[in-house]
Length: 353
Ligand SMILES: NC(=O)c1ccc[n+]([C@@H]2O[C@H](COP(=O)([O-])OP(=O)(O)OC[C@H]3O[C@@H](n4cnc5c(N)ncnc54)[C@H](O)[C@@H]3O)[C@@H](O)[C@H]2O)c1
Image (cartoon, rainbow, N blue to C red):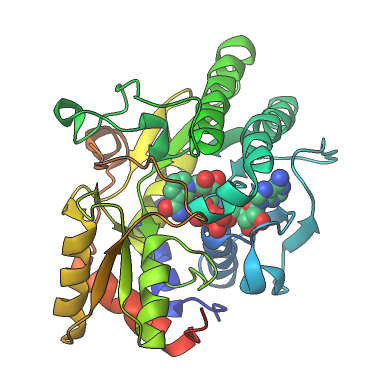
């Protein structure tokens, strides 16, 4: 039974993965950031595959230092064939025995947290990635690094939707630089290990994934909005409200991530997201009104000190590469995803500010 997530979503992800899931049978996976938003999905998916689908179980070792894992992250469920280690990936990790896949999802992903922990944000993507690449290389394992769409910075209009070949327009001296620049270096490390040592590396650039499991203390835009709706407060839209994003529902994203982990061409980076619709934050509020069928008040306010300004004006992925090479296709449209997320959040959020 999925903890704090929707069991129907976990089942949907495993079913959509189809035969590809059998590649995990009998394999050993090291997952970093195992108690974060995406990490908890991976843990539930492997538990579901072991219980229902695989003939030989996958052995999962999940590591997390719990720096931004929140209340739910700290509550670790005991599953067969799964071990949890409270470990900081900035420290070297010793590994005895075999290792087939390394999923390096540790990171400080929410702008609120990387504003609070800039050096930790930098280190997990650089030193942490290097430590994981060393382990993967020693064990001849495939490694997937979770980078970010933020490596593109603020692309100009002719590079939106943004393909993997776009080189980025990023500031090395701003409130977001600790995240954007360290993810770029993490990708460079993957490139070097692939070129110098032949390590089978892949990089994933997720574009605004959302869904059940995002905690109210996450502070990314959708949990923020859902929490204020629960509290009966107007939504706060930062900046002009015209900045755009594309939101990818968690089941689509997890299928895409798993396809990269299993089938990605070594050395390659993949955008994973849903290119439609690209909407502004004000339009997002209107969508929420349409989905909930209730008016939702909002204020357009200055960026608070706790949130790093200088955010990209537009973000929208070109996913042709994942479509062609991995047969990745998002299925859940934004209204349906919002409906699942907001219904879930209404049931579990407390509305505490
Ligand atoms: N969710 C998204 O939409 C999204 C978008 C772009 C990139 N990403 C990247 O994907 C990865 C997972 O994202 P998420 O949404 O689950 O983030 P998250 O913040 O919910 O989870 C990350 C986890 O990593 C752990 N962690 C941080 N530093 C660590 C360290 N030094 N050692 C061990 N564990 C550490 C945290 O405690 C947390 O549990 C991150 O690297 C993030 O940057 C996610």
